[in-house]
Image (cartoon, rainbow, N blue to C red; front, side, top):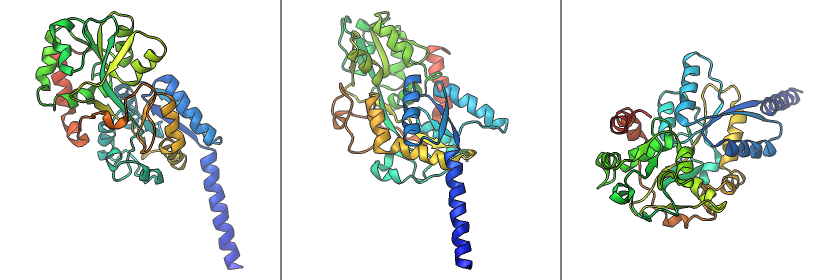
Length: 326
């Protein structure tokens, strides 16, 4: 009888746990483009129809400003983050704001693509390279080409003050021999502009307002497939990359459902969803989108998340000193 009671109690506990997951209303804060965020949420809810997800989208700096204000007020709304870069999440990990979760899907990822303690996991590789309008006179192959006289006044890029990917890109390039902050000073002297996010860069180059742009890969490749007069180049020195990591807030009231979301975006099904959207999946053994070179031919430049975190404030000040505060 005692054994039966224990078994019954365990069964009820499991049922209540399952019910709490199924009844959950997750809140996702993300920097994905709106259509991509909706597709990600739709895919997850199709796999887990009893979990409803509400989502809020903005650039990583703005999303983080909103979240930090909520945390300071003692009322963080988000359960899950899916944002541009690991540096931002490393800061949150060190502040004790992320839940350590060892996803079983991590076995399918290179160890360099997730936090050893399970605080965050990369979901894709989003590289930053050069796009150009097909009417441009020069066909760039190198980062240094954007500082040449042929590109004077014709280059635009997102600002690290607005875009998390742009900050990672700047921090990556300043560590490359022959580039550094002198490269950014040369760009500014050559009339390059830096403001807003990647979407503004895409529009400026696609319409011919600018000939060249520094931008994340999937945007021009998508537009090229639709017939836009643009090309995308992986410069010979290599490219920076953000990995759009996913993480669970330690304050989440729906942690079990949040774990399901993490497992989903890391799963083969979730990664196929990102592939269909035109991203390079972070999971091993996956294909790359149409229009991309083979994954092993893309040279991704290294960046250390902890070191980049320590340098972020100074790097933003340095960039602003060169280009202004846009």
